[in-house]
Image 1 (cartoon, one colour):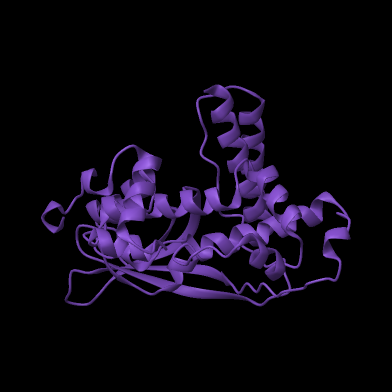
Image 2: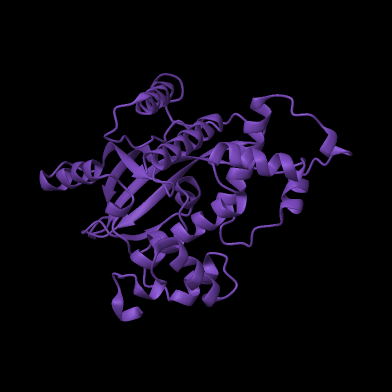
Length: 301
């Protein structure tokens, strides 16, 4: 059990390092109660990200690739109970959620408890609006993302306006197929990490689509099947397909628990070609069927 948990922590470290490698210094790895060398490494990685964000990149993000980087303003419209009624779509790219993850959901589901308390305090003590503060959002990958926000309201209405400034990276994955690629030697570990980082980003951005075959993926990323498969397993201790399947099932679980979307629609939205396959995979992953999961909107089941 301890070994399995340590492997999970190593995967989180890899994910965090990949985020930092792509220029994102907003994410943090959740700390555990363990007092070991891995926890020390996690603390140090979080400290490095925090220092880089505060000292070098105040916005928390810098583009390290050749594609363009944009900074955009995102707006949440909340009701008086801090439920999300509307938003501009930029945040879905930055935090990794889809629209249905957010609409009519409590803001508490995507920010930390401390941030929610700080936000609530502004209205409890009657702070003059607009005002600014830093809120810690929780990404789809369960990493904390600190974002500077301005809080305001609408004249003669009860809605709360939450404005965020978020970076938007444009990613491109151009095929660079080499002849006799299976004979091409691995140059260095950095090249391996960059390759797997691109594949990691691609999978998370296409969870609603069927996963291409390993042959198609290797052609798309300009490498061979063996290098892609073994490289991914090295960093994430699982296969490419298993990672893809686990991530879309986790997203489906969140949608089931927090939305009123019909079960069959959720299966389609997460890349399953029919509901029986989705139900079978879901039960194998979580130990119970989607229908058995307690939903906040039982009347929609």
